[in-house]
Image 1 (cartoon, rainbow, N blue to C red):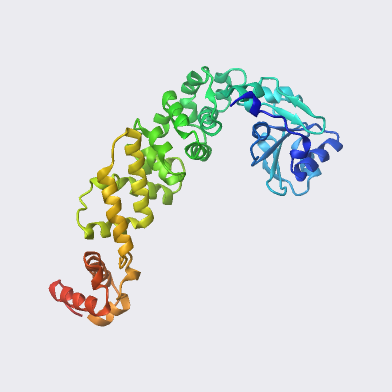
Image 2: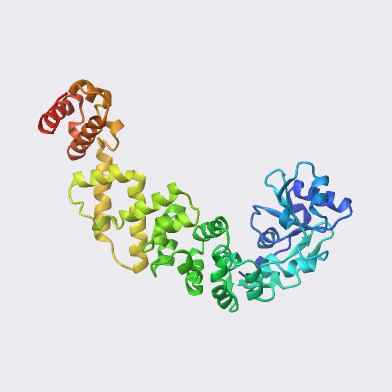
Length: 403
C-alpha cells in the first residue's frame, strides 16, 4: 500500500448515529474518540463494519447515558450501544485515565490510532498511519509483551497479513512462536473467528504461510500439507472449501470440532475430503458416476472438482483426466432422468408396501435402496411399471420373499 492511498477523512464521513453518540458523551463531560480497526479502515478508504469508541467514562456512566445500551463486556469495560447500521462498542480506557496509556496496550500500531472527529485531532503515538502507508504490520512496543497479554494476537497477526495485505515486521515471527503455548488457553470460539476471516481473505496464502512459519498451524491443524496456502488461494471464496483445502492431510473433523466449527460443517468438510481426489476413485461407468452424484449431490461434486483443480493448479500439474471426468459428469447432468434421491423414484414407500404386501419397516428401506440402484444403473427404468417388475423380482430372490 502506498502513502498516497492513506487519506484522513472528515467528520461528515461518519454515520449520523455514530456522530450523535460521540456528541452525547462529550456533552456529558467525557472524552470520546474512535479507535482501532474502524480508524484504520477509514484511513484506508474502505467500508467500516464496526465502530469502536474509547472513553474515560466508566461503563456505569455509559449505561446511564444510553438507556438501550447492553453490557456485553463489563469485565473489560465494554458496553454495546445499538445504532442504525451497526452497533457501536464503547469501552472505558483500559489502562487508566489517559488515552495514550490505553493505546500503548493495543495489539498493532495500525490499530492504535485514535480520532476525535469533532476536534479534528488524530492521536497516533506509535506511527500506525506510517506503518499502514508502508504496508507494514508492527506490534505496539514489544511484540512479546503484547502477545503475552493476549496470545490470540499472534493468530491475529496472520489474519491481518491476510486481510490487509501487510508485511509482518521481523519482530513478529519469534514472538508468535513464543505465544504458541499460550494460544492453547484461548477460547476456541475466538480462534475460530480469526481463522475464518483469514481463510476467506484475499491474502489467505500469505496468512497461512505465516501460521506455518510460526508453528501455530501445527498447533491448530497438525498434518496440514505443505501446499495448503497455494491450494486455499486457488479455491473459490467458500469457507467449507477453503477449510478442506487447508486441512488435507490433517484429521479434519477432529480439528474442526476442537475449534468449535460445529458438527454439520465439520462433517461436510470430512466427507468432502473422504471423496477427494475425485478422479482417482474407481468410477469408470456412467452408473458409477450417477452413484457419485447421488451420494455427494451436485454441489458436492462441484466442490470435489474445485478442490482437485486448485490442488493441481497449485502443483503446476496438467489435469486432462480430471477435465475428462468433469465433461462426463456434465453430460450426465444434461441428460437428466437421474434418480439422485429416493423422492425422485417413480415408486415411493407406500407403493412398495402395497405391491409387496408388507408393513412399514426396514424391509421397505431395503427395497427403496434396491430401486435406487436400479435407476442409477439405468435411468430409463424409472417408471412405475418397470420398477414394479424389478421390485417383484428382487423380493422373490431375497430372504423374506413377498409379504
